[in-house]
Image (cartoon, rainbow, N blue to C red):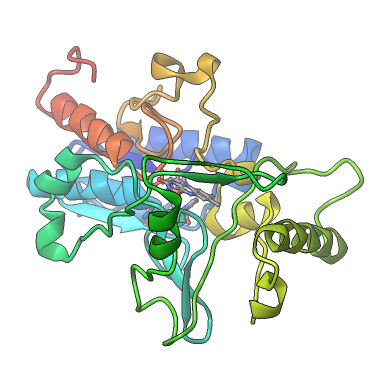
Length: 296
Ligand SMILES: Cc1cc2nc3c(=O)[nH]c(=O)nc-3n(C[C@H](O)[C@H](O)[C@H](O)COP(=O)(O)OP(=O)(O)OC[C@H]3O[C@@H](n4cnc5c(N)ncnc54)[C@H](O)[C@@H]3O)c2cc1C
């Protein structure tokens, strides 16, 4: 449970106290998922209508919708940057890498339009091939484009600002690895083993791959949890399995009045979509209008 919104109807300080104690209890039970720095003075400050905990994209989307309706919103983030798992960082000097999400394929059009993201510099680089799956026997499955077109396309750098001229960055993502390996926590030796495995596999498709690598880093589930706060490195906060679809995800409305959830653990789930943030903000605004029965 990561992105969370606390809404206070103006003046209901008693309710805030209940929310704060409920949160403190959650912190006590699951200290790895929460930081307590903000529980206290901020909660008692009557200056804000809504407090968003976590500036991942869903928290930011929820904050934007609430602010657009005239609410005074405070966004709290424990990292020095916003964006959560969709941020691009300068991982090596001169090289900017999306540490986690590297493809924007689900951002909701309504969110893009409502928040006027294009006016604020949002743009998409369209990939011109849909899918490429190589096999060890030399075969491959390719999307609707021809192989010749694919070979031309992969030489294209879509965003030249990521790396110095003539250089490239590459993300290699593989599933699944245990958050808690049976033989003990992730350590440098285990990480090196995985790095070697990745290099070996990639070299089977691009023989000079290893020699081309200038620098690399590997993020285990434990690293993702430590850096982003995603418990066990679960990229959608709550796995998207049939038992956890639709209404079986976390509710937007938490069991305590005034406390809402807007992260990927809620419907419709993870990925860079903005939909949980949008839906949660809608639930909040309806509640503030006194339409609590109109469930999102
Ligand atoms: C390795 C990886 C690759 C991925 N690839 C893709 C991809 O290619 N395309 C795609 O669409 N999706 C991808 N995803 C999934 C997607 O990034 C996430 O599902 C989505 O970004 C989650 O957004 P969120 O706003 O709900 O939460 P998060 O991005 O998890 O943001 C939560 C924020 O809350 C902050 N926070 C947490 N606890 C506290 C606290 N106690 N106090 C204050 N702040 C706190 C965190 O620091 C973080 O900034 C990937 C995820 C990972 C990890």
